[in-house]
Amino acid sequence: MGRLLFIIGSLMAIGSGVGLAIWHTGNLDPVDEIEIARKEHNFPFESQTIPGSDGVDLHVVLAGPKDGTPVVLIHGFPEFWFSWRQQIVALAEAGYRVAAPDLRGYNRSDKPKGQAKYTLAAYAADIVALIDAQGWAHANIAGHDVGAVIAWTLIYDHPERINKAVVFNVAPLAALADATAAGATSVSWYRAAFRIPLLPELALRAGGYRTLANTMMRDAKEGAFSERDIQIYKSSWARENAISTMLGFYRADGLDGDFNRFFAKAPVPSLFVGVGKDPYLPLEATEAARKYVDRVEFWPEVSHWILQEEPARTSALMIEYFGNTSD
Image (cartoon, rainbow, N blue to C red; front, side, top):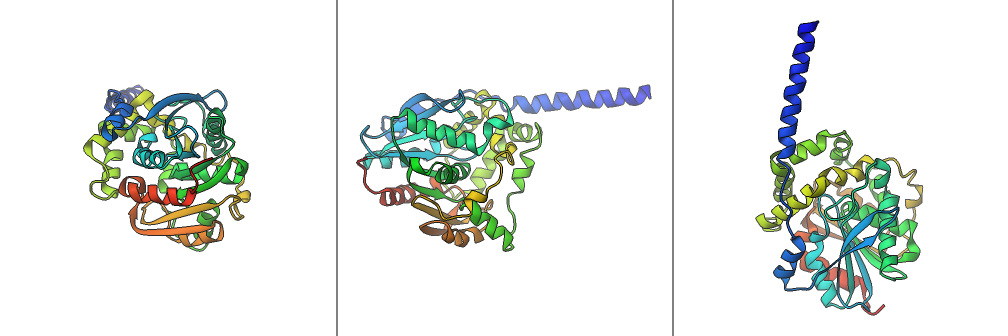
C-alpha cells in the first residue's frame, strides 16, 4: 500500500508540474489594442470604464457624435470589443454614437468570481447599465455569438430599452430549439466541454493559446485575421487570466430558468443574419428564425467569423436597418 501511495503521489506531482508548465505558457505580455486600433484606422476611439450591474465595472470603447443615435455592439467568445473596430468606424462616420463594451470577464472589464455572475440576466443587465451610464433612453443593438444570445435576451427581457436589433449567426433561441426538435444535429458539443472545471482553460492556455488561435485561423476565410490580430486576441485572453472568466457564460448554463418567453415573435424590430459555413450552429435554424423576427438574411459563403470576413457588408447592413442617425 505504501508503495502504491508513493507511485500515486509521484504521478500527481508530475501531473501538477506539467499542468503548471502548461499554464505558464499562457502568460503573455499585455498589448495596448486601443492605441493599435487608433493608429491602424487613424480614428479617435474613446476608452472608458463605466459601472455595469452588481458592482462590476465594464471597459467600453465609444465613437461618433455624442448626439447621434446610440448603437451598442456586443461581442462573442473568444473575442472582445476589438472585433467590432471596423464596424465602429463605419457606424461612427455615418453619424451614430457607438458603444462596444468588453463583456464582464473579458479583456479590460472586471472578472467577478462565481458562476452566478455570468448568467444571461447579468450580461443583459450590464448592457442596460451601459445605456443608463450614457444617458440614453434606448439604443439599437447588434450582437454576435455569445453577444447574439445576450442581444436576444435584451430583446425579450428589456424591449423598452431597444430600438432595433441586428443579430449575427446565432438564431433566435426558440428557432434553435425548433431546429433541434425537427432533427437538426447539435453542433454545440464544446458547450458541455467548457463546463468542466479547470481543464478547458488549461487546454486553451497550452502553447500560448495555440489551439484557440489555430481554430480561428482555420475556420475563417484567408485574410480575415492577420498574425498581429491573433497576437492581440491572445493578449486579451491572458489579461488577468481572462480565459477562465470568459468561460463563465457556458458554466452558468441552466441558471437562467426557463426560456418559454422566447417562443414568441420578437417584441422589437429585429434582423437576423444566418451564415452557411458556421461549424458551431445548425443551418436549419436560419429558416426557423423567420417565425420570430421581421427579417432574415442568409449569407451562404460566410463563416462564423462574419465580422472579420465581411466588415463593410455588416456595417452597411446595420446602417441600412437602423436608419435615422439623429436620436
